[in-house]
Image (cartoon, rainbow, N blue to C red; front, side, top):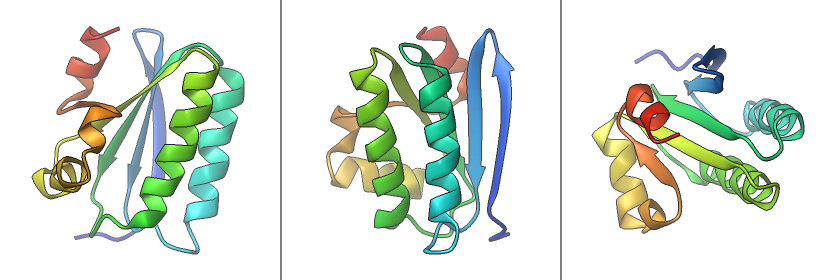
Length: 115
């Protein structure tokens, strides 16, 4: 598995879709937080989809980044949708009951249909 941290983005149907892959650790988490903050400020009150893939493991670092961003986006009237196709990452959200907090989809298409 490639551990290279990478953030890519595209706009699909007018909705920003940001994809994050690779290792999120003490060195890369600030970059992710900064990237999320830019989108939070630019899109107050809008919906955002974030895809999560290629993570070697799911630790508290990505969870803390998503949680902080989720709270700020919701406070501005927007929504943060997570696209999680990897069963092992989804399992973490199920075990921690975060599936009841986040809008989680298995594909970007499903997330966009929910707009």
